[in-house]
Image (cartoon, helix red, strand yellow):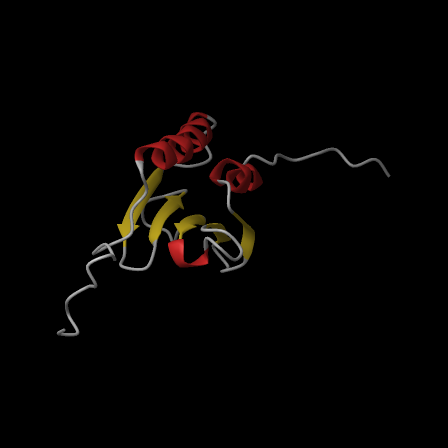
Length: 110
């Protein structure tokens, strides 16, 4: 088989399904309404799908939500990555993983 052809059981690219996109866009829409985020991009790559979140279009993404099916049996297919490259949360349940983005500031008593 030529190197440029994918195996029959592997898709040409990884993508988010409708349920996953709805979950991501619900969180995204809330942050847009709060004025924190302004733009997003979706990259569908062979090994993973990436939803990038931007404060301004011209900047690097604040966060990346990644779906990597090859990790689904290990740490979980879903990952939230900060602009620094630090993995903020990883897991099997997208809703649980996205909760790391909902954390607000909390008052700490001295």
